[in-house]
Amino acid sequence: MQRTIQDELEDIRSHGLLRSTRMISGRQAARVTCDGHELLLLCSNNYLGLADHPALAAASIAAIQKYGTSSGASRLVSGTMELHERLESAVADFKKSEAALIFNSGHAANTGIIPALVGRDDVVFSDRLNHASIVDGILLSGAHLVRYRHNDYEQLGVLMEKHAKGRCLVVSDGVFSMDGDIAPLAELVKLKHKYGALLMIDDAHGSGVLGAYGRGSAELLGVAHGVDIQMGTFGKALGSYGAYAAVSAELRDLLINRARSFIFSTSLPPAVLAASLAAVELVQSPEGDVLREKLCANSRFFRDSLTGAGFSIPDGSTQIVPIVIGSAVTTMQFSEALLAEGLFAQGIRPPTVPAGTSRLRFTLMATHTHADLAGAIERICTVGRHLGVL
Image 1 (cartoon, helix red, strand yellow):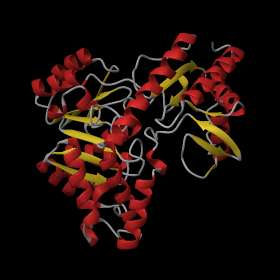
Image 2 (cartoon, one colour):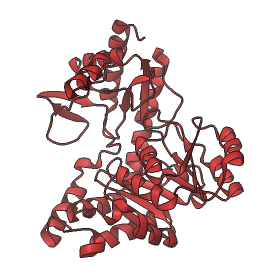
Image 3 (cartoon, rainbow, N blue to C red):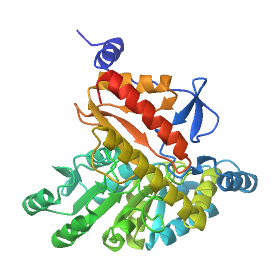
Image 4 (cartoon, rainbow, N blue to C red):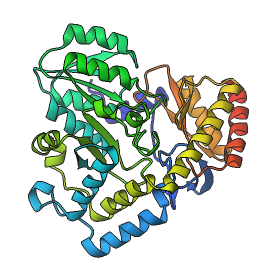
């Protein structure tokens, strides 16, 4: 008998995996109004608090007044707007690359870049905990997929020795979005050189945050020169929307001609481009330095406090701080209990994370106050003890 949509939904619900949306009224800030209740927001990727920054808002408004509300079509159809080129030039300067290309989202970037670089006769070596958009890009490419254990560069070397053929691409998150740890980029660069591979880093959660100038994980670890494709997003720490690939001029030309998500999508509108341009400038300013320092202090305090309380937290040093619980049902009970305590912290379940590793994923912002976080930690510990997680 054929399964109905209702059957599928009931199966999802019975395993504690049913998802739904929550209504946020007003701006994305440290505190939000969610479903009519004021909550401390602890699950946003708005790491530097730029999503409601006056400079980004002013730039967007000015761009609408000058350029209108839409780009009209794909850049290969109705042309590249001035703001597209200005933003790509700013990104290339920011990332210290020859060139850059803008995509409409991180998912569009990864599903466009990877199939443009590799095909059926090629091999992609991918960390097992890479973001779903990377996996989707690899599947679309038709290339042979070889996965290596999370951050295990020694196993990666063994697998590259065995499977390398055709064009080889090594791809990894820079900062892993569900664990908050950083890839061993120096070792990946060495393997890339040894086997003549391309190296692509998805630095969506490192861009704007890591490194002396916020250029990301490759800057932090001093290996930016060895990474062929640095993908990053504007919609997280940079407070806007869209994504980019920082690449060589030659690779940019290839992506323009081969990346289907670029070729066949209406390009980003002026308001978004202008906000992103303002954000790229801001993160390199003294204000950006201050925001990164505050984010780092908040992250360290929050992580150390929860670890000291006895919660199971993966090793890491970034603004992403997960409490691994295991059970999807218990995870969602924890999340709901925190909502009742005035804390918005999202439960993460399969397929986003492997089965048996459901977790609460806390994300810190530069705009959280010490008092905000101290109060949140106390309530998290209280709920954790009540549920037997702590």
